[in-house]
Length: 143
Image: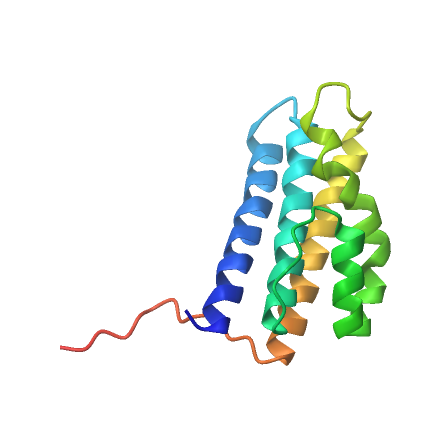
């Protein structure tokens, strides 16, 4: 599998996590705040790992967005602008999966979605600058 396809797989998984978070917020009331925040963290983690992979490095096996963000900053310092978002989201990797792990408010959930969307947009943009090209949605069919 070529590098572009590996990166695309990371980005597709990331996109799915963000879609799950947004779907849960839209259709489940009261909102399941902890799972929504968890999926926002997971989306960000996978986008960062995809970007790291794009740059020829195997992504580290960690859920720590700050550590992943540091790795991305070492590749492109534009990631430094997202650092506070990484700090905000990283706590949701583990603590949000356990009862009474965190006291998360609805405003935190909304912020998590906003940050995950922002990170998605920035990572995709920076990846395209590095040569990432999403596969065509309409495969070429030859007869």
